Image 1 (tube, one colour):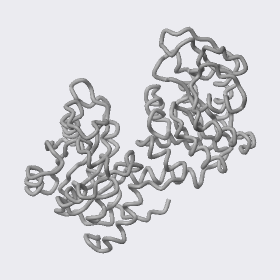
Image 2 (cartoon, helix red, strand yellow):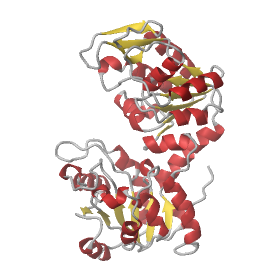
Image 3 (spheres, one colour):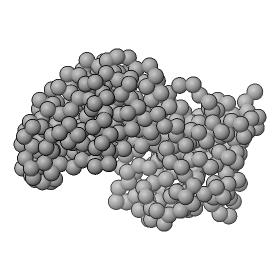
Image 4 (cartoon, rainbow, N blue to C red):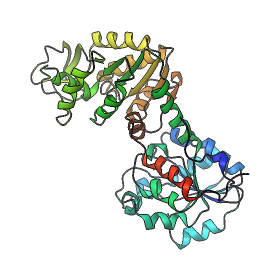
Length: 403
């Protein structure tokens, strides 16, 4: 994918105050300590490079959904502490994102120092995409680096507005994500198989965008129920998406056999780990039962297609993998993907969580850090955070450029 924005190699960071937007929206335990530091480690190449170049680093991240309020359990102390351990330096955590206290500390920083601001979503101005709020944050720094790929599909102040005020560029993680996902869409070798699952209906756009370039679309989760209903099957009490039913009907007609649906499913008498379950044909789903995973015949059908693929994109688990008795579909498909010699791209979110749970992550070509952002990109949508970097090229054509 051709870059239309600056990279880290294009700017001079020596002794500059640098705002670095990261996505450290990591799981925290009951003590607000980091339970899984994968997203932190993904940003380390950018952080280390900027420190080596003599930058004074000011980290901005969001955590959870505090809705503009200060929530003790979502403070960034534990994240700063974990980053300190990884880097082997003291990462000071500040109690606010703006204000005299923050500005005073930033002004006293030396090259190589790293500070972390408080959870940016404690401020309602972030979600409201407030221009003045972004201007105030930008005023503390010389350069802005966007490396929060997982949030780049959001129109929020630290994603789209800061780059209006100071020279900006993409971090290594953002570039890696864009290049990996862009390359697989543009140059995917055939057979090209896409696996779409999960509980959300927002993946219908991904299907519409990718159908022309792929050979097989394997469907699971709530989306499979929607397509089964659209094909005329009785899905019992299974969850499906009413709003996309008509789109699913149209795609089944247009797809020329590319969309591969389950032939059997695991049904349960209730959505519960103690539920009674059985495998049934999709033609025999009981009226009061719910389809909650793919059945053994479908696992074999899907697995065979996956093992023959040269390119695989997976977005969304096949069943409710968090509950063991409903995890067999996701586990077996993950195993088939791992066995394949294809280029294997995992679209973040629950897909990434699933392959990590089953210990298949190290077999994948690329595991995205952004579920929503990767889906937007796969369905052909320009990410607001990336668009902001492109526009920044025109606003600041010379300042701090490397020569």
